[in-house]
Length: 426
Image 1: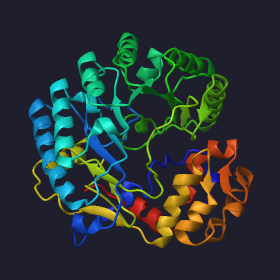
Image 2: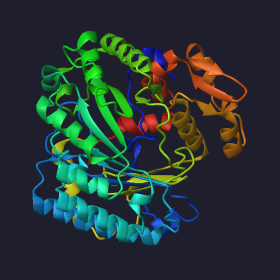
Image 3: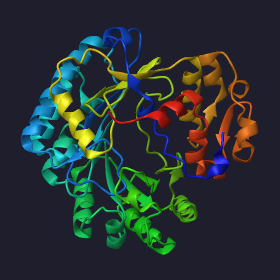
Image 4: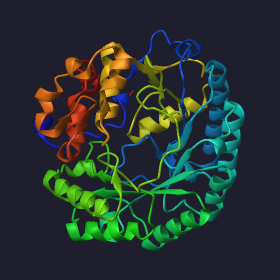
């Protein structure tokens, strides 16, 4: 556990990361994988964008022609029907459509996406919380009308910066007028929850320009705001510059956190800030419930197996994986994944809990694993300055939350670290 190496190691949005996945041999049948499991969440992945931002490390490709989108939706429908046959309980409590940019699809294609997902999976998306991602260039009234009519309860838009020079520096070319029009259109659509993503640590960004972006975002009074530190990765456009901005990012993070808290938002995690009273409305528990993923960039979780298709960032690998996906017919097996033993399940539960502001319930952990988390992990020794420990919870202090991107990776197992370090795209 080495959080002292720097506060920005990596963003832990899931454990283990896909780079720890390996081809499964034999490939298990999904009917066996999901036997006795509770799915909980449904995630649909659309791997297309109108452009690739300089900071992006997502599984996505740009400029997909209409015929490729059609072929992808055809494959998605084949997969959904086979997955539904394998998952015994399809009483989902929450759903999300992400990417990529789902609204890269036209209004007609979005309608087909909703139709095939609902019909093939037997789920009414209007009856459960549904989040959909969009972008300034694709948040058009016709697309947003489809999302609103089909039950989207949350729309998340990546603005990153309201300062044109900073957007260009992050290789995110966009016109301010388009951003404003998109946000106005989302508000006019009537979808109840708006989330705005902003990035700090952009080259040339200052506390003053950062406050300008924050105040501009607050003009739409979004129910949620996510503050992301800029990460520089080898396979992204900005990664080739080889820069690091730890001190700048720490300063800007604290400026942003304090600014949002003063504006009446509550902190949910290092990244997420939410207006009080805005709840997800879902019964989903990320520590204990599973997730069914549809699409070649989606991952699925059960208590014992995380699985997906091959993972890549570089464009040529992504295109090859998408081509393989649309040619497939065997969606009733898990192809690439990671088998979780008892230690890995405990680590995942700990990471998923500790990195949230509310912290970890010791009783929930004990009821699930039969042990105390402090007996299983030397948290007090490793993270003493950044922890608050009571009989009921283990939580990160405000400064501990600041170091979430170091504390999370420090909790990875040696096995997962070794797999991630040895990962090579296929």
